[in-house]
Image 1 (cartoon, rainbow, N blue to C red):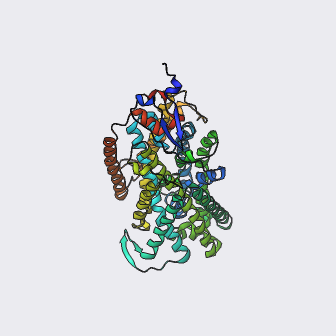
Image 2 (cartoon, one colour):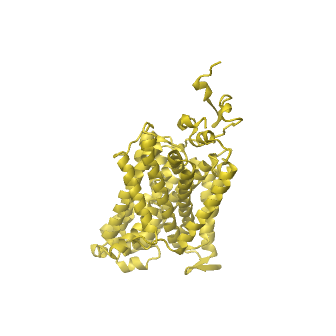
Image 3 (tube, rainbow, N blue to C red):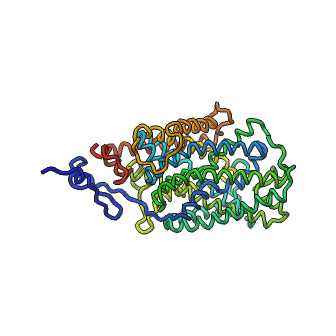
Length: 507
């Protein structure tokens, strides 16, 4: 009896778990392929709040003053324009690939499609490092914000790290914020989306008030000098810039949960980059015009202190902190979303232990991935406020490595799968892929010891080295544990019925 091709590869869906039919078992003997899936719970408003809030976090509140101090007003703006251009070029790769293969995992999915298991693993692990590192400094940022608002008592001295005294009340608040974020994600994307939208609104209101007040009530003389520190100052700001744009790459991680036309998702990636860059430029102008350099240099939380100075009222400084807390929460949500979805996708593909792919039976949240991300976040809070710059620079390095992998995947897939349906097509075709690779490499060089910048410091390299060692160990363990997984099975686990390549299913 002749079996049709359609029957042979028929996939039966049961409660979001896919099984191959009996005839397929002739190729993959006794392999009932289970593929957990995420629910589409993000509406249009939720997606827009996620796109903006994922990029704009707490960094602008703490770092906008140092950007102006390091490079001057115009120098800082030029650095961010360069970052916008480079990130937009790289973003074109994400914008085309995300709606083409709209699955949780983002960089893992793209890199695996282009280069196979090891390339996909490296890409995913680098991006996971970036998300976890950023999520880790959001706890200390939250503690610092609450301290500014209410003045936490300096009692119960615990330890001193790099000149910063860590006190029990500050640490408890930082850890409480981390636990609250874990709880929000534990109860599913509906809770996260609603909370994220409210926080994004608070962020926008506070930022607009600060910018308008800074440029109208401030003095142009405060913005001098236009340039400071020469090329070294500009490069110093450029080193921080990639971490400030971490977030647009969260969109591919959550695309499986978006209820939005695919073509719009591609446009959303570029929009998020441009809007985030515009926000940072406006904050630079607000700081530069709002207060003299000596006020900015002496500020503990620069944007809040400049707001207090320019409005001559602590109330406005507190308003900025509330806006900053909104930014902390939106960015925090995005980083947890990115980290847990990558861990979930890697586990689903049997590239990490199965525990990380476990979903809550009611809320459909990746619980063990959440606990790991939150646990690292709590450890980050123990390092104190001065660890902020370590996490920013270290996470930036992880980001640009991930960018390079996705850019290479974008270029390779132009040749490997020219007929892949692409709802959004980046201009320039293959040449855009070359530009994205060059832009990614340019970013990476900035972090290397022999690069034009100062490179990463000892603490940052220690973080990168630790994450790399953990990754190598997990790679070896999981590669050995799942060595008998057929390529066709992993193809189905990563891409599902709709996006699996038929020619791989027999392998």
